[in-house]
Length: 281
Ligand SMILES: C[S@@+](CC[C@H](N)C(=O)[O-])C[C@H]1O[C@@H](n2cnc3c(N)ncnc32)[C@H](O)[C@@H]1O
Image (cartoon, rainbow, N blue to C red; front, side, top):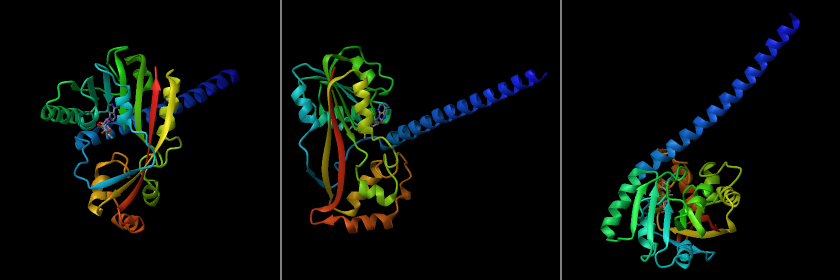
């Protein structure tokens, strides 16, 4: 009788632990889903990645330029895949003409804009279509170069779609990007993350069996010509509020304080921190 009681007690304890784990697991999965939906909705509402209306100038402290690296690696007829292409703005302006290009994005609104921009450009070597970077359905061993600029990646899937000796070129936003501003607000992109995305990408690329992987820190100073130019950036890019479309929350007293402390003759200074990665299959 006693043994039976202990057995059923053990069962209850085991079940409670299992149920708790299961609850935590499903909660985490749901949170991931909510985050992803929020990001998806954000890009669906933004619809393009065009900053031509913002008046700012850049000062580069490091000379690694993703588009130069891309040009150096592309040959006549190279096949290039651009992941998270946005409205195709960068592809249309900076990618070579003598190559075959596919630009993909999980947001159909972005792809709509990209196709609109493509038509206007008259370029014939580019196609755009919807694809999730985490559910890539591109051909195996097909591409010479995969580019991912400021978007998420799954290096194992990228490895499969690259030809032997193919190249992966990444440019991302690092944890310390706009750090003074994020510190002032106590929030923002990667502000509370323990591990920066640059290191996560680097580790995942190494784990996916890529060779000769280089992680390059990129330092840029940006000078915004007016408060409106700075605000236009912060309203559009999830620097302060991570994929939150409700921009009314941006505290204007703090913005004014930041501007007061960071204005020089060139404009309002933002210290940008990016990273580049180059890796070979
Ligand atoms: C910051 S924008 C960068 C756009 C472009 N690469 C550039 O550098 O101008 C990020 C883009 O990645 C896309 N994106 C985010 N998560 C994605 C995912 N899981 N799969 C495909 N695209 C994604 C967004 O829709 C958005 O267009």
